[in-house]
Image 1 (cartoon, helix red, strand yellow):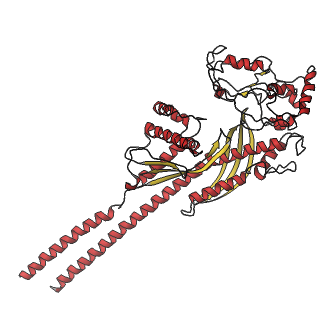
Image 2 (cartoon, helix red, strand yellow):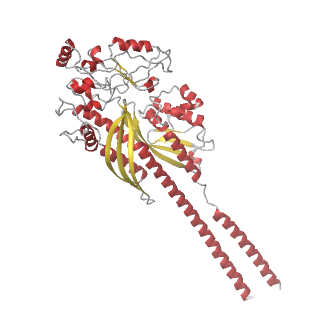
Image 3 (cartoon, one colour):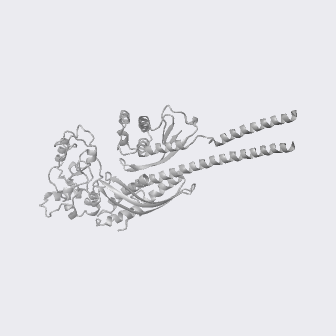
Amino acid sequence: MKSRRGFVFTLIAILLVTLMLVYVGAKYRVRLVDRAEAQGQRIHQLTTLVADMENQYLPTAVISVSRDVLDAMAESTVPYGGSGNTPYRGDAFLKDFSSVMLEGRPSSFDADLNEGIEFTLPAFLDMFVARVESLFDVDIEYTVESVSIDHHDPFWLYSRAVITYTLTDPHTGLVYERRANVAGNFSIIGLQDPLYLYRTDRAMENIIEASAFLDLAEHTPTHINELIGSRNYTPDRDLDALSYLERFVGVTHDDLECSRGCGIVSLLDPQNAKIEGGYYSFADYTYGLWGGKCQDQQLWVIKDPAGGPSPPSTFYLNGHFVGANPFLQGGLFNIAPEYKKKVSDENADPGPPTRTCQNG
Amino acid sequence: MGQRRGFYFSMDVLLFLFIISFGVVLVLAALPGKLPRTQPLVFADSVSSFLATTTTRDVFASADVGQCVRNGGLSFSSFDYTILEQVTLFVEGGTMEGKTYAKDYLGCIISGMGIVPKNYGVHIGIRGVFAYQPPGQTSQSDADVLVTSTRIVFFYDRQNHKTAGPYVAEVMIW
């Protein structure tokens, strides 16, 4: 009887222990699954963050600082300005652009542009990285290896930076070591035209702007052609006409005379204007006044957006036609009196052209 | 004899109770105890990715949504901004009008493109600036599972030539 009772108690004890083991084991497995799920989600979140950093955030920083730097360099490095420097030659501009982006001062002469720009690229990234670190609870260390700039096309610039960074997650121990080629395009609209500052000894500035030709009823092709004609615009059909960056590099009189540039102030973006084909520009009257030549003297005719015969039946502009020349409108810009005189003297006897400019 | 029989009956009852209890505990222990979070987590990420990568141009490619947006009288400085960027531009000035534009825009997208099934609730917000929740959803407070997908909104405002953000955008799904 006693042994039977002992057997029963042993059986009950075994059952109880088994029950506890099964229960605890199941709970432990649930916790493991929860933890794995949380870590998987964290990894996914950080991977998305890294992708966003390289595709969106870092290009935004590079674009923003590049624009600031170009404006500051247009203001500070043109001849007859405070620095007294001559125009850039060769790669000198690119070297200075890089050093202003990284340190706030050019490498080729002594000037501090830090006041002209809101942030250098490292200062901008410091601000942004601090925000990301506090939001996502990660540690980021970075180095900007190099920066460069070039034209994407006549109206868009292409700024690039090589940034290496390490993102460490203290929660999962995850480490992302990345070397990112960060690049972004941005329009020259809104930038300071260095040529105007240079040619007028800073008496005149020209911010490159898009026009407000939004009224389709008023701004017909005929109207725009008449507008161009009435303002004595010299036409140019050279698709390579404009270069914003070249205006930092070659702005001496000889360069101007033979440059293919025919005035950033009068440009047309076919993508916005719904024109088929490449970019077109209208010659800038001021450019001609300074001795610049455009290569095609035929009147520029607006084409049908659908490629039909001229004049087109429908045509509309929604931007990027930068309008009337300030000289012809008179007084739109505050031109220094002596400069007006100089312009008048040059106008008196332009004389025959003495140089033959080559295409391209 | 009667005592022994009683003892066996008691034993049977005890064993029966243990077996039943054991089975119940096994079943309960195997259950996760809470609803799975993976599906809403993935879904919240999908919605935030959609909002962060789809441009206004893509939105207008959908005829119904394009019509809905046009009916709302919204104007866009560029079609190349993503939905989150455009919403940020609407609300950045802090005006009531801007917030209404942003809500109308998101309303058209959510209802017209069907990015959130009806059995889910969604809340889209830019922290400290703007919040939108489509009408007719279940309340957040009644939800068993509430997950958030967070992204930074930081981009170049091509119209005003300045950076916008960084703002913290949140998509909550329940």
